[in-house]
Length: 460
Image (cartoon, rainbow, N blue to C red; front, side):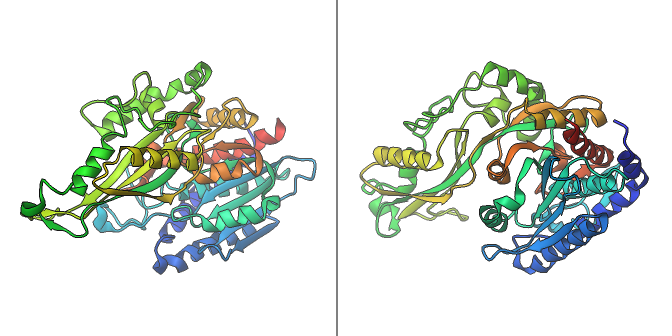
């Protein structure tokens, strides 16, 4: 669609890219206390930018429950009868050191072959600048925006989210809107936009197994004391069958099978998931429940994963020890209607039932995480987003279900009538890893798409 906001964005595209570089250079690592000042520095810069481009209000919000500020701006010039859009991004990043395997300094944006490499290039500062400059472009026009805008930026997404969770719990009225746009996460490929219509929830727990009161000499006690390392592997091996199906009674009780319409809606993303599996996983063979595609296994089916196991001696050489303890970390990716507390209790009950009486077992909940979310693919917000993507990528978005979690999505589902996820980086951008990157060919398209969403949502 043609609109003066697009001409403004094109005219200022070089400055917008420099803004992205500027924000990247601030090492806003929320998990490291030594960078608390940098996180606030980034927040203050973003607050000032909101004020410059014409927001009615732009404030830093600190909550006693958290560590880093929110940046919250509002523009309500469309009037009381207009719809309101709540836009979310996060401006904090994961730690990064060049020694981790980077080819260039992680907080000095470097362009090679039209790809920008830096921490935050894809997760998620490109989304911050894309949305900020899309809003600027719209507010620069004489007619301004057809929708009211609330723009909230989080500084703890990578390290807990205590501040935004506390703010939402206490001030839902301030965030009230018709739709929330969550700009966190990538599209499926640089040349193919995609929209996530499902996110799994997550819970984390630990299994502890105890045997003798202390480590023992394996020559004296091997064969007459049940080794906790052996016991824990015997227990863990019983949590799945040979096809990868979880054997915990009640685990699938509330799982609603995906409909044929839903399977058809996401089928366009299957080839991308298969290609990415071969490129990234590279395991000898695809594994898991029969009758499901790789995407479906990763997005619409719940899982029980063994994330780590410990016990005994693992250093160089031989140590003939029979260990006193062993442990394992377990996470479950959950789908809608699975209650995290019920799932934990079911696993705990099952493990207690199958554990041998020669050892003592205990389960500890580590993280309740976020519930699963399904987003209607035919909602007004989804259809508007799809039209906006198609305007700038030349093709409609494919729908996908993601295996990971974006906790704020389920939170905002309690605040706004609709939720839509719109990302402007891509899955190959190596988020959280060395040489994180974003394709510059996507940057202007992303700003144009963000502009069109606001314009189109206000007209429909």
